[in-house]
Length: 284
Image (tube, rainbow, N blue to C red; front, side):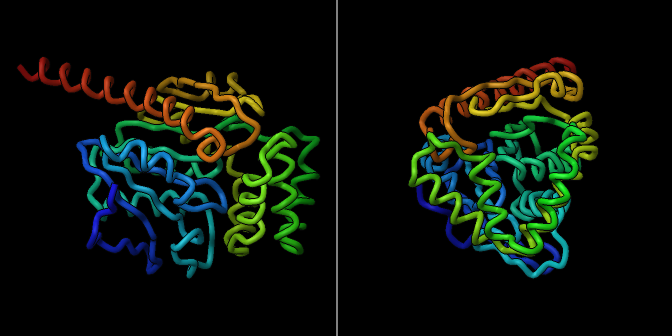
């Protein structure tokens, strides 16, 4: 699908937010990439869904072609960037789709600006929802925080190799992710990573306030803590598993991911249609 021309600029707190808009439809799929990546990770999803939906992809601040003229880098700010995009583009009937730790940005948006949001889908996200890392890892976290400040590129690469990729991941995917992690904008990378280490309490609070069902599509290379989801997901959740060797199913298994995304989207729109029918009946 061709991108919409003459699209309005999105400026939030004097910072340019890059985005792409393709397709047409009454429902908008808004895709938010994971840490240190950009909107291009969603190319297969854009091609697949833009014939039936309006599809928006975003480069969060400090990523891709978006600006980096910002002094602080927090998850809350990423969420506000997503809200600014929705408001400026006047998006309606939005299904938020977020990957990895940047799915926290769509969580912020869904809770703080719920009116246009009809659905929430996390991909490789909320695997240990609202839960602090065990005490034995706290010293490791402190060490990682210090290493990020002194050797960001190598520390980021090691994190990607040890937690996001496996020995079975194809070399071209591994090389792409390692390059992105090594070359991320350093001020953003350091502060936002440290912020996420201490974000779990706010994450828990927001999950409990999420106004819609949480749909999750997680890869089985690393398990999901379903007990935490059962405890905190106030509006319930649905977990779909996808087979893979890495944290990046949109790049490793795009066809299977598209099928599961399609199922989640259909579930969301069916619920929306049922709610509209009930509202019509109540008004009669």
